Length: 605
Image 1 (cartoon, rainbow, N blue to C red):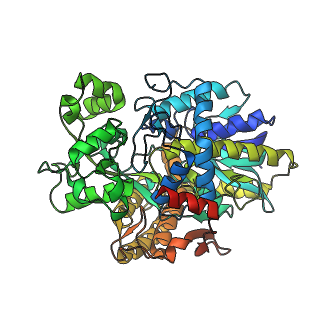
Image 2: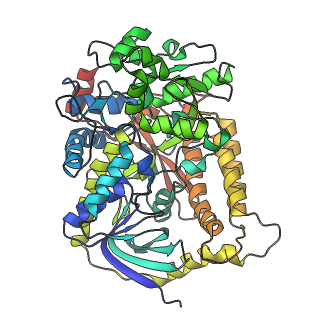
Image 3: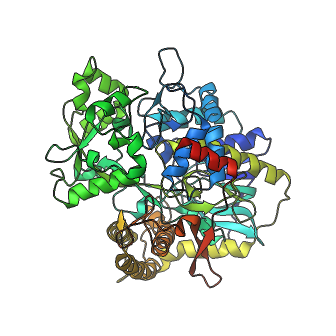
């Protein structure tokens, strides 16, 4: 038997984005030993790509804002299949988490009187997003890292977790490998916090970075945890579409929050003709009022470009399909038009949107202060994920906690922009706090070496397969991405998704036969072969849940069931691994909301 390096911590955090860092900080503050494993280098987590801001009802720009309005906006955006308790905690605690981040050194943009500035964003009734230009995620990670390095956290960079280790029904650690040298390691822990982010790399066009292969969801699923809301995948309406080398890279909603407008090839501002009935009272029906809203006029209604992401994405797809798209298969997003409306217009745009200015200038040769951007939908965020307790963030598997994008509940059918970053802070803190509490109350358990040996054998199999007709891992991954993009994308229908299930079954078989060449050190092909299991697991979960929900709700749009079903609006779709290894899909009733929260929603209408 190999002599594995073994490391031990009270709390082990998997992932070093906003949720993972905040969990590690909180657990360490509770006096337990904390380890953190990250797939990439510290500071390279996908959180750094978040641009627009952190949603929190600070009421610095509009004093009508409050946790009640934020809660109601989040529930309505999620089409009321959200976990109402998570939405309540999030709305109430987000302001304190933002102020805490400020106390730790985050340099937010400021109002004239020195308070944290907040901007407009889609689905939010009032200006609510605390921001740092359009580089908010980067500032969040910098601040959390600078604070966290003083807490005594052991960081294990460039490691990938292969399996969760269990003693009976309880998680007692993980088996992982170091990506640089290919050495296997055992990490023992009394509690594990999953904070691994999303699943974007299951799709061809995505804003997500290479790490986002659904690892946390698949690890938890294989360990017996329940996944919920897997059908709800958010396609951000604005990603770059040209040139091909940048297709899918995010174009922040902050562009629209600062006054950017969407037009088709005819120059028509098409969103004005596509305002849902339940938003008409809050949405401007002319250009002038929409502009006044972006300038902070409290009496004005929001422009239609700031409706929820699912709706805007579908409107863009409609324009493209009906032949009114831009030359490269998108639509136009224009911020340059505001130059005549503000003093020193070009400098104003560069100051408010510095990353967007440089991104388009360097990658597409477009000066956004002078010409429109070409944009289109891009796979962006996973509303579904590990089912957790709202207060403690523990999953159904004892000792396994989850926070951030890999956990599910707060967002329901659709996430509002900016809620992701406050979600990381609020529930990262809670996960770290309760994981530390659990660890203090638990004893160390022995690692089952049979689990370790099985995981090692599985990881090394791609090297041992005979050469010949076996696929390479990149080929299988590419075909999976094409399949999900084409058959389980923005607009869905049953026959296509059934076809996708058949394709996934074939890809599972091919993934089990992939051949990897070379050796374990510095071998990206091997890393990709290991990722395939996670990508296929989450893709199957998305597809099966999407078939089960025979209605259109939020980010899940069925061409064959275009209306909402009131009965399905009271249910979450769940996914669990059955004893025979197959994927079991069930329905779970959403608990009734307390009367006081129902009253909040009614008041906010």
